[in-house]
Image 1 (cartoon, rainbow, N blue to C red):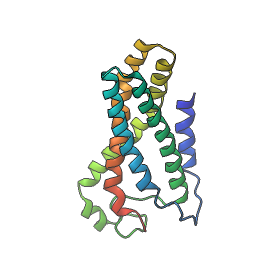
Image 2: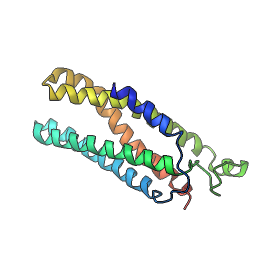
Image 3: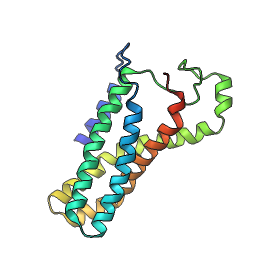
Amino acid sequence: MLSVVLPVAVALLFKLKIEGVTAFRWLPYVYAGINALTAVLLILALRAIKQKNITLHFRFIRMCLLLSCLFLLMYVTYHITNPTTYYGDTNFDSKLDILEKTQVGAWAYVYYFILFSHIILSVAVVPLVLFSYLFARTGQISRHKAWVRFAFPAWLYVAVSGVIVFLMIYPYYAN
């Protein structure tokens, strides 16, 4: 149920805009860092389980879950308090004119491909991760392993692509 409610709630929150709040402009830098840390912790969790250190693996995964929740809160907070940032918008007017489109060229296709795949997988990863975690916590290890085959690479891709998306768009954040 959470994996359906969560994306719908986030989508609805994007329609909400709180004008005049400028205190949260720094959030993209923080949640990009959270994505990077999540990616590192996921790799460390994989390493821990390959070394059969279940306790350490579980700790890393719990930290990743906590970071993902924090990310979501910051992401929504930023987007309801700030205007949309457009890739290539060098004059920060929330529109792309022909000159700006020409300047970014084919990089816009790369950016939007990474962004859209990141968004789609970020929605899909919620049930994958939650069910994987549930199966591990309830001792259903074979089911946990079957789900993790999809959950781990998807979650890692979302974390890494989140950093890449940030690095590509941060020059266009209005100051």
